[in-house]
Image (cartoon, rainbow, N blue to C red; front, side, top):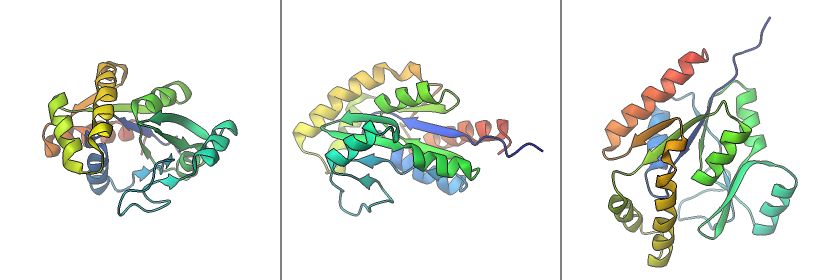
Amino acid sequence: MPGPAPSKVFVITGPSGVGKGSLISLLRHRIPELEISTSATTRSPRPGEQEGVDYHFLEKQAFLDRVDAGDFLEHAAYSGNHYGTLRSEVDRRTGAGSPVVLEIEVQGARQIAESMPEAVQIFIAPPALESLKERLEGRGTDSPEAIARRLEVAEGELAARNEFHHQVVNSELERALDELETIVRSKLSESGQ
């Protein structure tokens, strides 16, 4: 007797500040069986963020040691910090038959595309670079220098958007959420989830 159908892994990527986290949070209200893979990072927690919930916050050397040990499906340096997806996080959830969402930067999404070609890649784009700048400034979590660095990186990321299976422009949250939900539900129904 065959086991359960393989779980889907959804990679949601795009520039910092584009609204990936907001869209994923709302998507999970609509599709509650989706599980979030908690990423690891070397950056400091933002106000209200919790260890093991928002991120696994690691010291830089501990992170690099785990990279050397092969513990990450993907990892990247971004805006002076390291981020990564722990293989154990994804394996634990997919092994239990749950579909998993990875919220990762473009560099990491490219690595996942190579190591897990079956993963569904979704690129979230801003309607324009100027709207991304406004969102980053509105968050109030980054210095003007950090925002300038993030925007510089975002330009290169936006140029890569065609590398991904699906693109959703987040110009209006509800419409973008509807589009994202349609993609995810379609892929889940293909795999019998």
